[in-house]
Length: 308
Length: 308
Image (cartoon, rainbow over the protein chains, first blue to last red):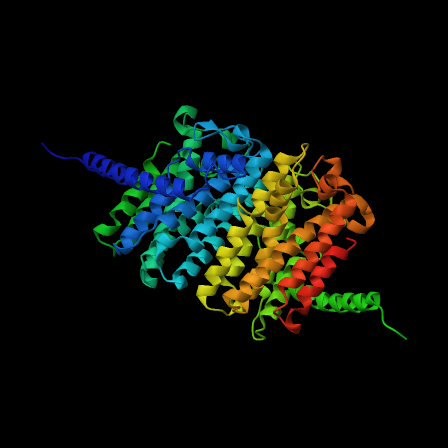
């Protein structure tokens, strides 16, 4: 009996699935502990915050934090606070993006969006407070247990990644681009900010938790840049290919809104090829790392082969 | 010729006006330097951020930062970054509060509100990015020049003050209270969060910039708690008494929205008395400080005598 490359891929996928499930369980537990108590006032706001964060989700960004900390190779670290911070930021961005004034989505992670389950004002405030909580956790969570020097650096990394020249800026470019065509360069610039910046920050925060040296930080960052872009390309591909039931959100939503996507600029086949090429470049960046970076390698493969 | 207490009050008012103008000029300059460049993409977002922050404003919170740093008495400190952070947070909260889903205001500081001058989606993102910028400035601004230990503590103070159990929480309680009557205790709890928490944070950040000891921090915090509440009571009083042209926003807006206010709970005369009593308590908290706390003393007086 011979093993094929497809068998190997299946083994890797199963292993990633096991590791991811463990990290997902871990971050979900850490998030539930750090989100405000439902019994504390204002209850409705706290309910909305917990609803928005704890309602499932792949936790790709948190898993990136844990996997980068593993790659940097210090076993004593506790990346929970950093993993929570990136998921809190991601959740805040989804809550605001789903609002009627933005994408006007009714469905998220297979459930009503936050403003549908509550109301617009509560969703707005819940998003605001989730962003704040990310910074509160990073600035004060005792579990992080690292030098304040590193903690400040992590706060700087996160804030630079998600502001007007990062995630929020990407969202603004996305808004302005709706209904008009973009060049590949413009599209890439948008996605490097909109999705890429937080994915890069996730990897960097994980590496900083583990006190990675500057050279390791730079290589991991180059990996994250490739994976972040591949992630967005695959998102666009899935938006064309996918089914609503599998995605947990409305398929074809982006093109229906007249948003520029990789398939609309490059075509579907070339978009897929580009994602695979980014995956190969991501792996090359990890060549100096040993088995400790295997989860990052498998994550990159997952990003370009996922079906949802 | 004898001097009356009214003459003394006029002298103090003139002196505060001079000091405030200097601090206002200073924070406006620091903000203009730290806000994103209009030539950098995404331009429209950056324009909205600058519009929301640089369009005037009394800068009471920034002045509190500078005055608290003065009171704590270390002349070598540079509180600019902290002063910018609290004004960025205040501006973000105004942009989001003015949105149609919240207070639906058309006028702010005598000009169209951010979503009127731009659009709702841009205003939403501008608010989001202003919050982020506050944390970026505090976490990385080199001018702050203090130990990272203190910097982390400042980030913790700011994040706790403005999240779901601080400013954003107060806003949520305010929303839920619209159209129903509150007890005095509930009203006070709402305002301690909604306005009070950021004012307290401003004083604490200023004091931390100047490396104040724990005892000084606690006394300044007690001062700030009184002033924060007095500030809100006076806001409510002015909303009843004021004229739109003087306020720079629509007078009577709160009662028109059915929002509970101090005058609606206590009556106008008792509200004024309560503000004056808080001013006296604030002064008492500063009894251990010398002339270095004079600006804080004059600020407390200003808060309860201001006409806008």
